[in-house]
Image 1 (tube, rainbow, N blue to C red):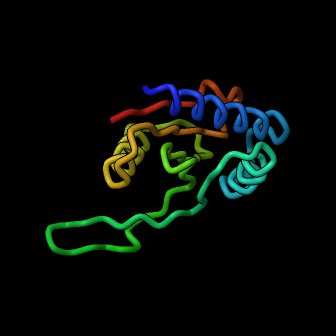
Image 2: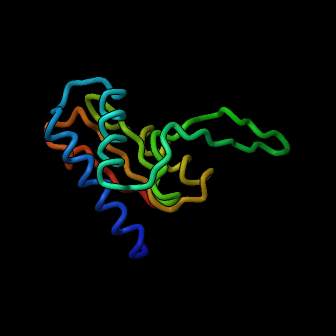
Image 3: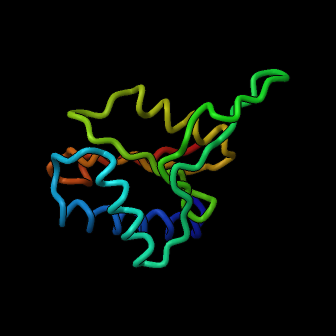
Length: 125
């Protein structure tokens, strides 16, 4: 991981821990997403929310194939979940996002975890 993305992921994780500390587990993903966007703004972390990312299949471009929860500073994909347990399909989802965005680092965060760091995964291409 390069130093810039390392610092950036630490800032993102710190903001997410603050949101989780304040709200706790048990809310819908949308509540955490809005709170995390607010926390990013308060901390002056550059981000895009619900960023559409096209998928290319041969000569077909599917513009609305998926939306990233967050793209932070154009470098780090952040995917939020509020599920009982993270599954392999969640990892695969983030890795797919990385591939189609040309980003190298993704953070998968499960806000339903009692301790956020136990529901946090860093994924890299």
